[in-house]
Length: 104
Image (cartoon, rainbow, N blue to C red; front, side):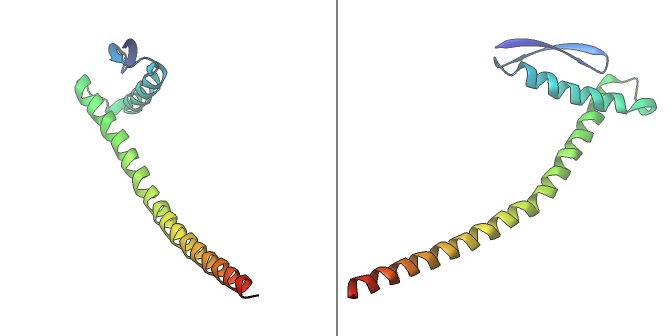
């Protein structure tokens, strides 16, 4: 375990993470800090409230990303089905060629 010092919303926090995850955690904290900073004049004097809004904004972005990724997954499913039909057709063709070769 490693301890990482993070700056979010003008304050420093020390958190523990798995060895090797330090840079990833710093990057994620930087995203949260960016969201807190984006509150600008709407920022509250209440630090917890600012962090809550930052978390909600990030959750909204994640939700939008998941929603936009779903059609791609449907396309993958259709592609998989198409590839399975092609594979079946190739197997039937190979079987037919093999049977024709055995008769000759």
